[in-house]
Length: 108
Image (cartoon, rainbow, N blue to C red; front, top):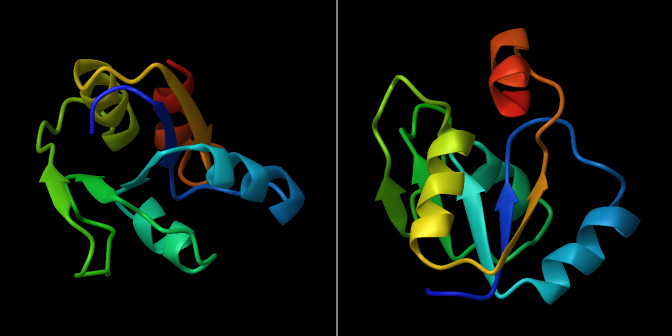
């Protein structure tokens, strides 16, 4: 999974399909960030793996990489994971909306 262009799918509000679809088609590694896995799969996006603490995911078929540190958000942990795996570029979809603490953590 090293290198390449990564797409991280979070579980917040998504932009219209004409925004996310071309991005998803050009990324070679697509990661569902916990519940974002379900959000991506519901849009027929082929998710390579799911990351996080899995407190919001319902899918059971996608490979999971547990990132259990409760002192960081799932998105933050996934960004670190992607960097450690050598991601050349990272796109994020679904980062807006949701609980206020998750919004603040995403922008921090």
